[in-house]
Length: 117
Ligand code: FAD
Image (cartoon, rainbow, N blue to C red; front, side, top):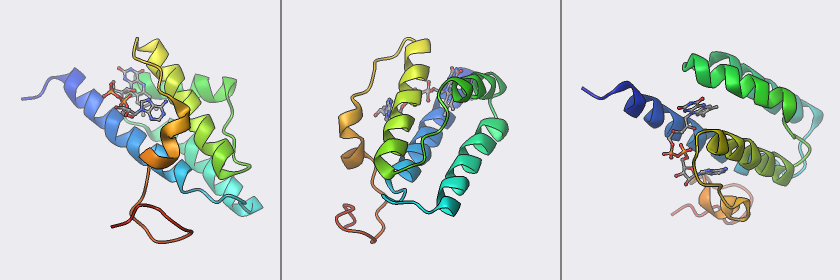
């Protein structure tokens, strides 16, 4: 069977994928309700994330870098920044945050070219 580190890494990749895709599709001009929803989602995610060590580190990161919900760009750049904080702690490469808009598409038709095929 798969080792624990392998399973933890797979969960991490799946979670980051959903996390960045949500932020990349977040409204450009969110309403107060949408801002509240994103903020709640992120804080609740940090509480329910099933790797306890990861969750407690992530909660500390949220204290240092509170979620930015004012716009799609603010939110997606914030998400890239916090993931880079995790990368740096785990000794991984720092990701170039200029490429996230193209990288995280949802395949859903809404405002403009989302890469859906
Ligand atoms: P991942 O870090 O999973 O990234 C997946 C892909 O996302 C990369 O291949 C790259 O294409 C892209 N990417 C990389 N950086 C960024 C970025 N900054 N912005 C956007 N896209 C990017 N593991 C632990 O061992 N200890 C922990 O404490 C820990 N904490 C975690 C906390 C959270 C909230 C999450 C979601 C995961 C955590 N993990 C932790 C898992 C860890 O972050 C990785 O997901 C896992 O180690 C697999 O790493 P990876 O090298 O495949 O790439």
